[in-house]
Image 1 (cartoon, rainbow, N blue to C red):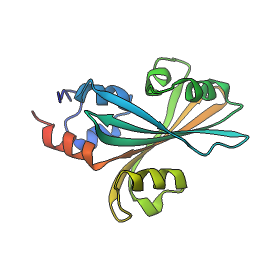
Image 2: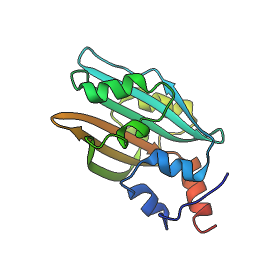
Image 3: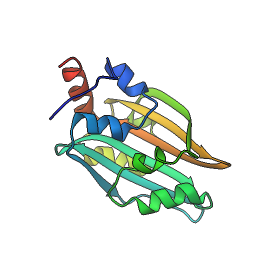
Length: 164
């Protein structure tokens, strides 16, 4: 694994970086894999659940949700296949991240059952603390929400290698 966190001097900086998490992960390793997990979508909402892995180590669970009527985000979520959505979000100058909140949660704090099931399938237990990034992206009156759960694998990689 390579590590080049020239812009990030600490794990805290890494978590609060308002740019693309995908870009930051590519700085760590070019071997980034996106695994799409079936998510519960409804008539009005579309959801996308993914596990991002670096060098076959799961490092992040991402959950994106948008109204189907918000065509810019619906198109991104349905057409990304096994590609990170950050490539599309940050390439479009009309899309803005209007909110980024970082907090520490337990699995019990998560309100979406499919995320909880995914985390359990990855071996995460209910009392483990996870760092959550919550983002809101907008374009005109359209919105998409993104929840990113940083897994211990990424915490260990960034913390261990931050000055190497």
